[in-house]
Amino acid sequence: MSRILIADDNPMTLSAIHLALEVFGFEVVPTSDPSRVVELAAAEKVDAAVLDIVMPNLSGFDLVHALRSNPATAAIPVVFMSGLGHGSDRVRGLREGADDYLVKPVEPAELALRLERLIERRRAEQEERAAPAVAADIPAADVASLEQHLREGSPLVGFRVGRYEILSVLGEGATGTVFRGWDTKLHRTVALKTIRMSRPALDSERSEMVSGLLREAVAAARVQHPGIVAVFDIVDAGSLAFIVMEFVNGMNLELYLRAGKALDAPQVVPLGAVVARALASAHAQRVIHHDLKPANVLLGRDGSIKVSDFGIAEFLSSLLQARDRVFGTPGFVPPECLHGEPYDEKGDLFALGVTLYACLTGTSPFWGATIGDTVRNTLEVDPPSPRERYTGLPLELDDLVMSLIAKERVRRPASAAHVATRLERLGEQHGFRWQPSMAIMEKSGQSGPTKASSTLIPTTSI
Image (cartoon, rainbow, N blue to C red; front, side, top):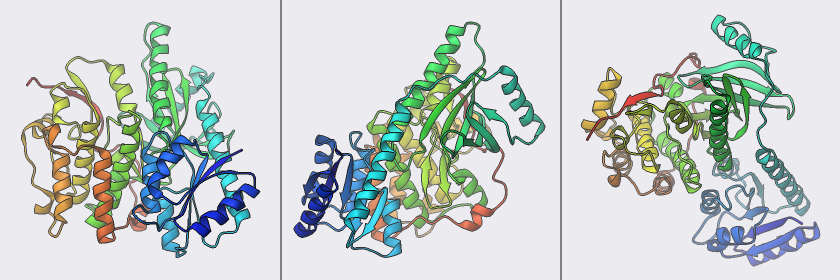
């Protein structure tokens, strides 16, 4: 029997939905106190939550953010059930993180059916992610053929890696090529990213490499959040490994900025809030990105914002094992890591600040003509605040960005959750909403390597 949490401050509505769902075979955990939602959802191990939006003290939007930020409740399907029935209200509800949205008065049979489907889908995804990734039996000749197709620019239609059919190239970078593919088993479009692994002398060493990549992928797959690209599978193909991910129909933020230059505050605030909330969800499960930058923020045509490549940078860094080097993207690696200290959550916050700065000004705060110049600027230069280039920028946003890129990690905000809350509050105060420009989305130049590529950066002695 599936267990459903219902939160509504109207006793009559709460009682009516409670009784109706019990008729349809659900076990119900009702509450009229929104402050208890996360606690009850975790303690009662509910399978889904039905939330009103307009409630005292905490809104449904606050609650869905709290649920998504708690590792014990992050994957619970959430249905908003509200009297707010305008199209913009429904769109906002889904963007805030709900899986479905129903307008009151609700037909109980429809609510029951939607809950059943959401719960079935969640269980299927959990079973799929729980299954260990199996190395695909892909002949070396097939991998060589794929590489030859890439070198020659030949069509890729019909080429397959295991059960995945490769359809086209989405992008290329320093760490691998990303393909648009088709999952022939589950009949869905996916993104496949290649990770090149040079063959070690011993099979056991190579096996450890694959195991390391699998560990990172499993850790990333654990983090279920609407602002994070889902990881579906790992395919071992000899000298290449393929990470199979959720396909986002759109473009990455770096290409978006390249096509449209800087963004204004009404765009940057909601975008930054989603990225910060995604980081907060990952950090809550001790998963650190290690290489956050505009190229790893994907913008969907449907208005979605998703962070990709969690954990991949850490895996690549462990593969290279170079002394006195740190793996990352120049200008986004925090000063303490350039001095040889470990990368942690505060490093992700620094990279978030650099990303927001680039969005507001059109340039990186530490850009240099060479990698060495960029590293020196990161260590030594205090960049001008965005307000010096962007007149009228809200002071709170300017202060937040500058605190994120502070050279001393102790001066940065306490957590990604804290940053997300500040940005969400600022967005609410000014009515900022993310709306991608379809004109920019349609512009050419969506292929090719990004400008800020991950690489080995020399560390410096203090």
